Length: 481
Ligand code: GLN
Image 1 (tube, rainbow, N blue to C red):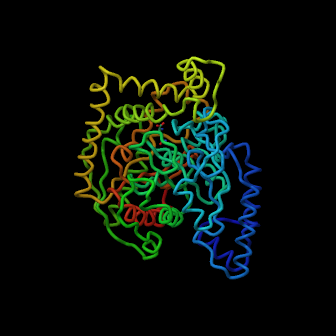
Image 2 (cartoon, rainbow, N blue to C red):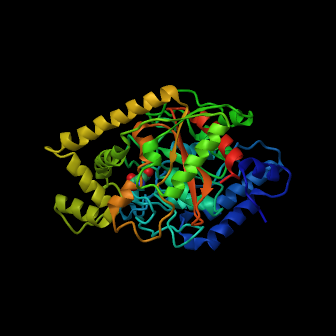
Image 3 (tube, rainbow, N blue to C red):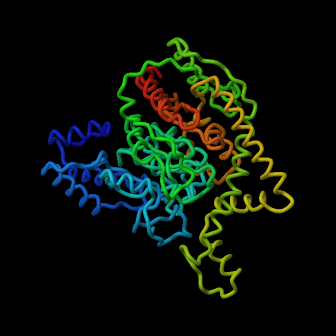
């Protein structure tokens, strides 16, 4: 019986002849089948995965060099393009659409011989926090199927949580990698804006969107990041700064002492579950005892994070999603001949209720007369967030805050009270508003038996120290909480 603990350990099993890629692919296909009720996958690429695995086994037998991700089983969120494969953003409007090209991130995984096992379920166009706004139905949390796995990358999170893939790619516009990672008890990394090309990532809110990584170990996240990060001729927003050799750097033992800020407004926020708050305060005490410098920093912008995020992202979404009109993409109702009716009927039939709500909100905040009051104002506040965080990072290496105010909620609540769902994004949206990297680490278990994480944020393009510190934290404190 195959057991996965890390890519490194899997590769040594292959090397020592204790398993073959094909056996491992069969193992994952079987697990996906057994866990079909979780609804994590939209499409499983079984035959292709078997073919690729057999090829890799042959190459290994003939001592032909294979890539750094040889045989690594990866799932990808249904917002990331894979040539000649369906791509729908979990939306009816893209029903039947197949991508004509692959995302740069996908091409880079394939170039290192990864096996893409399938596409994962998510909230429609990445809009949601419980994976309940999907045309394919909700995804269930493997630890408790009456609860949500979080969202919007719920299928990706569950595929790693339940052992249906080794790692997964998701996307994070306001927390969609870190929040489900928190709810599923795994690692969720959102690299900083400009670290990974978004070429081939379906746009939700372009100045926020980032591809992120789900994994069970920091080293695995580091390896995937190393492979997919870096300049890309197809995306001018990617930083030209050299991508560090994350995995080599992680191999060096690290006992560095860091300067760590925490935000009292975040830890004493009325929406935060007391036990989550206390666990994070406890972690801060441990860090202080271990000679890290830990200090409180005043952050009075916190309550503006969610409104600013929702004004700007809905505005960007209303513009990005205007391309889905039934002419070039997806479903198209030809009964109406008049052009405006044609658009209306396609968009009315194709988008789900949450996406419609956001398009309307976004159109409103961009409309004449309201533009300055909402959109311009939100942009100004976004700048204040950047300025304040720059000041914090002048003096500190990291900021520690919760990932999510509460553990995974019971299924079926997403539509009841959208505002309270939005408010739960309070801790994750800060990193997207400011473009910094952030990670959720699965350090804690609540007395209600559910897992929850802690979120570490670092300065722009400081993924390397972030990964090193995360490794330290998981090794040192995993047993303590
Ligand atoms: N919950 C956030 C939203 O609905 C997260 C979205 C995301 O990161 N894709 O906008």
